[in-house]
Image (cartoon, rainbow, N blue to C red; front, side, top):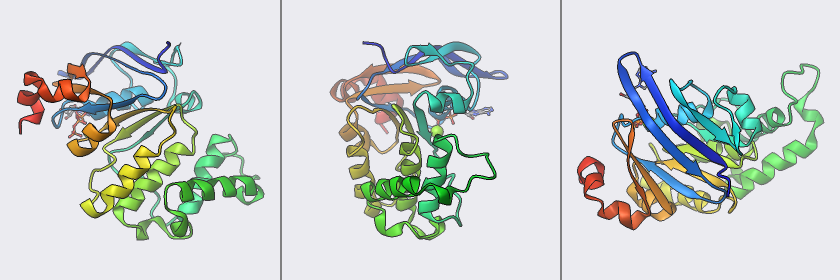
Amino acid sequence: MTALLEVRSLDKRFGGLHVTRAVSLTLAAGERVALIGPNGAGKTTLVNQVSGVIAPSAGSIHLGGEDVTRRSQAERVRRGLARTFQITTLAPHLAVQRQVELALFEREGLAGHAWRSIDGYPVLAEEAGALLVQLGLGDRAGWPTERLAYGEQRLVELALALALRPKVLLLDEPMAGVPRSDAARLLAALDALPGDLAVLVIEHDMDLVFRFARRIVVLADGAVLAEGNPDAIRANPDVRAAYLGH
Ligand SMILES: Nc1ncnc2c1ncn2[C@@H]1O[C@H](COP(=O)(O)OP(=O)(O)OP(=O)(O)O)[C@@H](O)[C@H]1O
Ligand SMILES: [Mg+2]
C-alpha cells in the first residue's frame, strides 16, 4: 500500500547544528503514530519540514506518492496535509465560529477576493457549526477565542485543522499547557478523529502516547532511535535511557 506520507532520509542543518539526521518515516491511511523524544530532539523541526514551514537540507517528502519537497505550505494543504502548532496561533478577539468559517473559506479558495463576503456562504457557516458541535464546542461558537479555557482553545485549533479536510494530520503537542481537568475532552476528541485519517502526534504526555498510538517513533539528537509498537518501545533499553527513564 502506498503511504499517504513518506519522509525519505531527511536532513536539516542550522549552520553547524545538525538537527535532523537521515530521518525516514511513513504514515498510511488510518494510522495513529506518536513521535516522541527529549526536548530539542528535533520533533518540531521535522514537522516544520513536512508541512513546508522550513526547507530540508537534504532528503524528500512525499504526499500521496507525489514529491512535495519543494511545494509551498498551501500546496501541501491542498494535497491533504494539515497540522496544529505547539504554541497557540489563534486570533484572540475573533469569535470561534468565525475563525472556523475563515478556515473553510480559505479551503474553498474563496479568500483573497475582497468582493466576496463570507456571509454569502451560509453552507460554510453550517459546516463550521457542525464541526464545533462534533468537538463539543457548540455552545462556544459565539465566544471570542480568548475567553475560552486553554484546553478548549486547543480544540478550536483542532477544528481549524479538520476544517481543511486533511488526509494526514500532524499534531504538535496538543496537550501542552492543558490542565488535567481539560485533558479528557481533548483525548476524547483525538479518539473521535475520522478512522481513515493518518495522524502523527508529537507529545510528552505518555498517557496520551501509549493510549493513542499503535506505533511510536522515538527521535533523539535528530535521528530515529527506535520505532515499534507501544510495548516494544516501552521495553526498549535505549529508549528508556534516552527518554522514558526520567
Ligand atoms: N530556526 C532555528 N535555528 C537554529 N536552531 C534551531 C531552529 N529551530 C530549531 N533549532 C534547534 O533545533 C533543535 C531541535 O529543536 P526542536 O524545536 O525541533 O525540538 P523538539 O524535539 O520539538 O523539542 P520540544 O520537545 O522541546 O518541543 C534544538 O536544538 C533547537 O534549538
Ligand atoms: Mg517541539
